[in-house]
Image 1 (tube, rainbow, N blue to C red):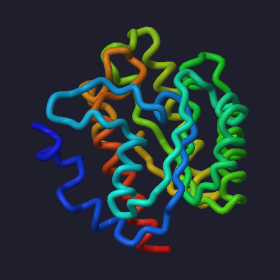
Image 2: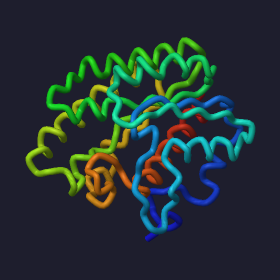
Image 3: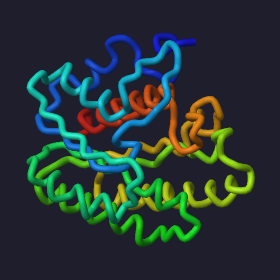
Image 4: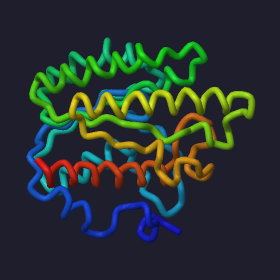
Length: 222
């Protein structure tokens, strides 16, 4: 199997149809390594990272799109807000992607309420500045074969707690929410990189497809 035949990836022409006439011209990404892009290559799949793929699909429809990715590996939600929100607002985005909380969930001292409050603050600030905002429920990396068995149960509980907090927040704030935690492939060990913390190139291809489809739904109903 490769990206062209993968049933969970974008079909030829699908993105152009879904994003046709989209209004966005300034796309900013805030976040950690998931936003920055650290996936391992997989034969038959593009090595373009998830956020970069979204930008490329948007730009294919609107060649004048400006794109800024502020993602930095290793950051927790409060660090993303402290270091990236101001430059993101200065960019003047009309579309933003906020990815945070994964590194918080890896910590046994994870505070779900505080983590989601940090994401909420970023979302509302960007919305107040006129941007449509995307949020994320992450793939459950606890299924990675590289995660030690002793770490797996606690990490799984925290990842699902984060995801289940993000969904009502997205509904409350009206974000374009991409819920990957419940995706059929989230429990597939073959979706994850050997570092036990990230997805691989197939993961990014699937995430890009789900994101483009959510953007298409948003455009169709707005």
